Image 1 (tube, helix red, strand yellow):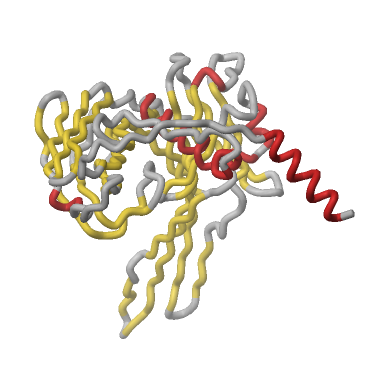
Image 2 (cartoon, one colour):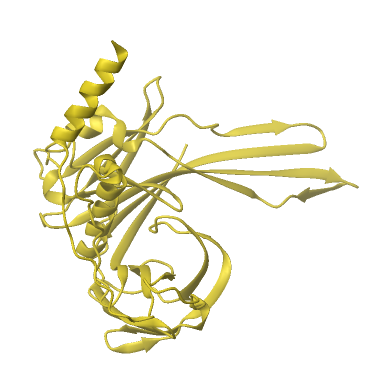
Length: 328
């Protein structure tokens, strides 16, 4: 009986399968391609992450630190520096250990171009425009017995605006100790934690036109929710409102004795981003490719990632942020 069932399944799989033929051409070039990720704009610094993608014909991969980078803002060149240290980006897909940095906060409307040359790599070019800085949202925090509830309201009339959101908790602790008749303060310890599952809350999904409108992607600094402005419903005043269950945290506390005082303070930090269309599209395509189970199994055409990098892969996108800190 089991053998008949397995045979039937195999026949069904054969009947339902399809064949897609494509032509793979190799031009004989030994040049590798470059995969670039860079989100730049009204943020503290711009990180340029790149890696070499092997060509069809084997050859040694070049070291990215030898790259020649021309980063221009409104036609003016900006200096970059190479670093090798851990960096958890707010906007990239992963943590980085080797990258270039451009330490200049850009303005809304700035035109950005980047050209990169590296021996053995096809030269790449990309461009973007820094989006407007989002209006600082109104944020209210309450507790309804099953966790802290955070309500965020913002205004934006442009239906084609793209937004991103991240919420993190920050715990600060320090102490003061009596030593030889003098109170000595310790250094303040700060611990950051990302808030997960923001896009899973039913109240959130009800604020959107459909449940597919709010998307979530994992970055090097935790999950990032993102959406297109025309997909979120307006209230009677024309404002957009979202309510999140941000869970529970330790809260504020104090310990006092004759010779020692310890403190703990807790905050939520809300990051509201405006994204360029290129960055939004790259995030969206990444999700489709990452969740394309049938494509990974070979049962459907693969979803290819978006790129606006000429000569290579990846994305150069614009980003701006507003930050609100809420003490408990």
